[in-house]
Image 1 (cartoon, rainbow, N blue to C red):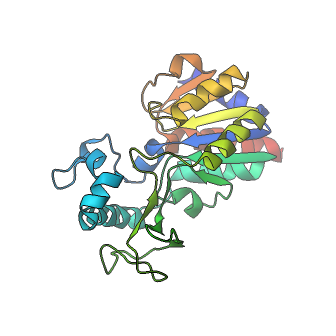
Image 2: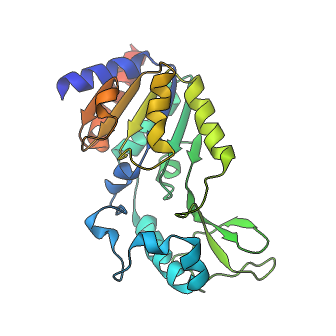
Length: 249
């Protein structure tokens, strides 16, 4: 591990334009269950059966009950040292973009500002009729499903469900950031969910160095310039504290 950390530190410290890509692993360290973990079942429902347009059309109240339970967990969750280390990186680097697969808002809570929430946010709701989007931090939501105050339509979570397409504007922003960066740092993601699963390979094809931090081996591990196995909340502060100390010298 020490060799991997040393290489990761070398690449992080020499970068000026960095893109960080985060997945469910960093949120799991704040106590938020993952789809693929043992906590993945809710009332004997598979989340893959609930987070779909079809499930919402069939039973919007049931789907909202599940999302309401997730929002309750997220409301009580706090950013962990990994989140704060990423915020510190944003302050240190000349150019910084965070791409996150997470919908919990913890990166914003930690103070990171240039964030692309590629799968949307559970703290936004969207009208299925007039498409009005609004912030909503009520936990629990008083009425399920919530109704739009503009047209009376049923509101849905403003997240990308299974079977839906991520807006191209978000993907374009991600690809542009990777094209402009001099380092891609991948944190806490299994590397199996597209389109983010391919972003490491896209960076490598563009001759950008890639550093990976994860608790287990991923499909890209052997292809990246440095891979460190461990918790992001333990590894990231080591890299950032060293970087901050170096810049203060």
